Length: 286
Image 1 (tube, rainbow, N blue to C red):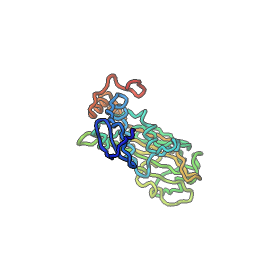
Image 2: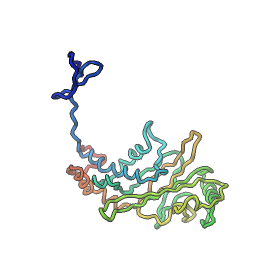
Image 3: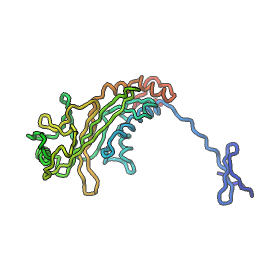
């Protein structure tokens, strides 16, 4: 920046300099030159895959967004969700798909905290957790008290006041433009040993609080994904959570949108030819 010795005050653009007046003095500075948008292989890899996680975040119900206790100061849950899942997210969407909310359900991490995780296993059309329910039999008269007693008596990591949240993601493909997208529902219940209200009043139509082989299960899981999250309020007014990752049965779509061809189409939609050979996350190219 240069101060001009002139009695006249003026401002504006002249050649490579910008002139402006402040406190009675006229100053000149170099004109900022707009940098050309970089389209290196590394940038295009991130640009075409990042949008999948952004649109997945938007698919989470407002009251059931991912929660991460272990994150840097100033980092939001949204930032952490993108950061921890981006390295393993190999889904490449075209510019139009990304703008229209396109996304493929992937086994993303949705919570991270100190509580004991809820493990998942696939048994036929059902996804079964490791939460033991003993001899509990679900019926129209099953109460929240019945369910809470079964969970707390049969699992050391649970206590009264804990919550179990179930998220169910359904994968769709738009019949008009072929765009993949995800819809998601959530339900949650808080364990209470004295609440005799009906269980169905707390979980609605959720299929995530069923039973298979004496364990809590999600029955007839559709194309998409499923996860349970264990949470507990603490004395600081915040909430502890378990570390949980979605189970997904969308392998065919993940392969389709994670291929070299999908990356090439995505790059071309941004006006950039796809580099060869294919850029992998750990590559030194770019």
